[in-house]
Length: 442
View (cartoon, rainbow, N blue to C red):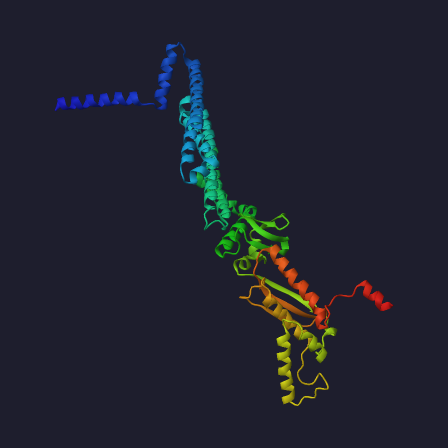
């Protein structure tokens, strides 16, 4: 039994010696350094300050060496690998300098680990040094997190399903959350305060925070509603008269929506305004088969009259409506004859009017126009009389949705219709000018 105890004791002693040889903790490094400096003839405070200076220099030199190696060797290898892969994630990480930020962590972690060794005899300096290195480490972690979020945003924004979604808003919110969390940790580390205490103190400042970040919070709520209800997408043509915006949506962020107007100016609108105010989104028109036309001709009321036989004979020579005029006149004649209408007075019975013939001509002209979509609603309707005459409104859809081509089509149609009005013994209403008053005076 005694022999067995002796064997166990020898084994433990051997293990202890091996452990001491493999131990590179602060006390061991300091002890070995002291032994070496004592052999050089140093002692007392001189030994302590010399050891601190030498160890500090070695740690700084090793940190810079590691930083150089990671920057010049590791990053070059990573960049080569990223160039050869087919994925876009690594390319975007390189583009956003994500790995460059990670390279700063290696020397900082080394300095943080050896701070106890360098300032072994200076507890206050050790505490201050660790706080400072921890502060810088957290700051670097913030940069790493933000660069990763930038990479994720760039990659996801290219996905077909997400390309027109306001993902910038979500990533901006993520940046705020990450920065806030790490910021609280930095405060906790620098001032040596428990994180729970920091969070409790922040609770008392919540009212101030809500006031400061009011626009951010409203913008986030607005962007969520815009995305959930699919109200606005990047690339949509929107019109918001309150802000003078009329153009394409270029960017949707947490607080603002950028609209590039057709004169190439940029209008920046608060995101929440798209929820609280009215705006027009032309996406429905762009996704449809045509663009709507709602433009009117204002006819002077005094020029409206019943058609005489002479007028009907003239209208019967117009190719588009000659069949209509004759058929309509036949129907009217049969009706008046069957009802024994006195035709000496045009007001009796049924009669065609020049504005009615014009309305039918406009409809026939639109139906023959190849630039008008015949598969969608097409009509010419008479609106209520106003102080500007009687409006004949064209309600139709063009085949083209391109703005410039659309305006050319509308211009050609109404050039023809305005020129056609006098053929029907009608006049287009216009406010009197100075020349009209001058002629009246004469």
